[in-house]
Length: 282
Ligand code: AMP
Image: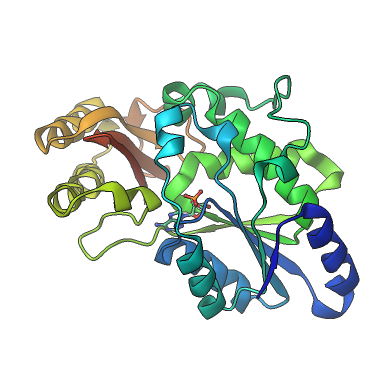
């Protein structure tokens, strides 16, 4: 694996090798890698061509400075894991390489309702920050395929929107990779490293409350079921930001017709750590 610290060097390398090496698959991450991230890398790797991963803890997407400061950094392990997973190139920049003029102030993306619901509502500015960094990463890598985790369901929709907004400059096919979970159902997340063993046990409740919705959903009004799932999560010791059942495009839903594909989503704090998860209901 070749490590690049500068976007210009990475782009130059890719320009030289793109023709003979085939299509480029890209996996953007914030590091502290786990099996979920590695699954994205493997999917890209299995599709052939070149696989590029980025590790950058992006300051512009943290609405809570404490969360940014405490974000786990495990670079040496990450490099080893990426090499084992067969990643070809790693881009690990300093903030100054991504944001040479300092952190952007007046840059905004037209994200519509995606910005005002769920994560957008609870983390103001978060998706603008995500777009700022992903746009720059896409410009540096110019991938043919982009691998995103369904674990961050709303982020997938936001980045698909960003790709649309970038228009012809960015012709990339987006793949949503199913969430990789611990044996008890907890979605793998870099933030799980901040949980103690007791909390790791408790954290299974987030998956259980979403499964409760999936198992008990009937055609008709959905609000009581969703409130019960939120109450279950509170009872398990979480401070709940939201539990929500939505259409696949994240539009609201009052009644289910028994047919429409849905997604159940939750965000909740366990102690200081905020966890999110979702499951698809087909
Ligand atoms: P992050 O480093 O948390 O920004 O995540 C980088 C990418 O990995 C994003 O596309 C995430 O959705 C994806 N990802 C994170 N956790 C998981 C997981 N448990 N399963 C699958 N993909 C994941």
